[in-house]
Amino acid sequence: MRLHQSRIRGNSRVAGLLTVLLAAHAAGLALADDPPIEAVGRPSKDVTLSFTRPGRVAQVLVIDGQAVTAGQMLVHLDDQVEQAALAQQKAQSDNTINIEAAEAQLAQSEVDLKKIEWAAERGAATPLEVEHAKLQVLIDSLRVRVAKFEKEQAARAYEEARLQLDRMKLVSSIDGIVETVTVEVGESVDALQDVIRIVAIDPLWIDVPTPLTQASGLRVGQPASVALAEGEGGEGSSPVVGKIIHIASVADAASDTLMVRVEAPNSSTRPAGQRMWVRFGPTADATEAETPNEPTSPTPAGPAPVATPPESDDSETDADIEA
Image (cartoon, rainbow, N blue to C red; front, side):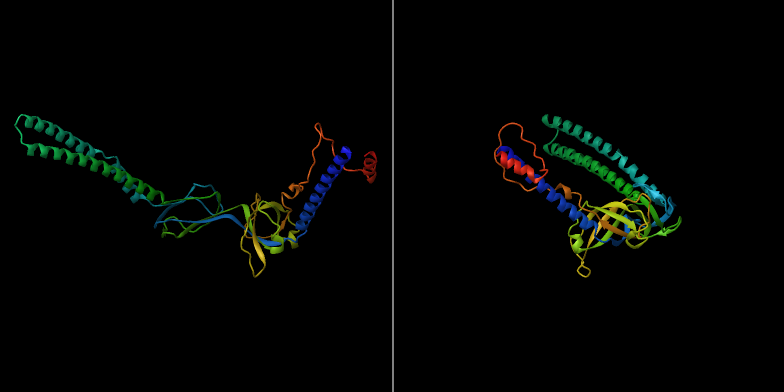
């Protein structure tokens, strides 16, 4: 009887797992059978760099189409005047003469105070002279503090001048390719004027206007097949496998579509801006669905019998006879 119950429970689990797998497979086929959607690829990063201050271009270190890395210097303004001002600020920030002079004056005032207090103890100095000497020590100690504060301010001014000098150098903020350079050496530029454009096309981003009926089954991380629009549905081109990285939260009511962003590798450096066909695949976790919980009854201690699918209806009949 116990063997019969174990077989029934095993058969139920197998049947439930097969049902879930068939449902997931059917959902995957439904997504795979959806028609491809036409979209346009765009750079995954696209930045236009400008100077934050006017100046004259001294160096242009890159050309159109050149690959650059983040932190690489691209364009340099003439900074001779700023370099001279920076050197002056550096000298002032390193200057300690005022502090040393104030400290020496304070030391002299402290010596004078001790002498006057010694004289006052012997009646050779008046209380007014003692009070005056004490105030002089206080004033000189404040002069030391002022001198130190002025040195700190000079150091801050030097740092500000250094940062202003760094702004005369235009560096790349991303790894990418120089799309356009709009200035020449010797040309004057205004603040915030477009100077250079850098794009990153590996990977590519494709914003796909997906019908709502199809978008409802999509998830971030789900694979997507991307092919150039050489023929209807992308026929005639080798597709690449990308993945969904973003699904919009607001649909377009006019077209009943939802914007789905796909990221696709582009080692062949296909130009951005081309029309492409995108087909979404099944969700990556479709086969990871769990079977429903089933009530179980206590089983005797020891290794549980292995549940195997029934080979035929006769197996259950035999079990019933044995019971």
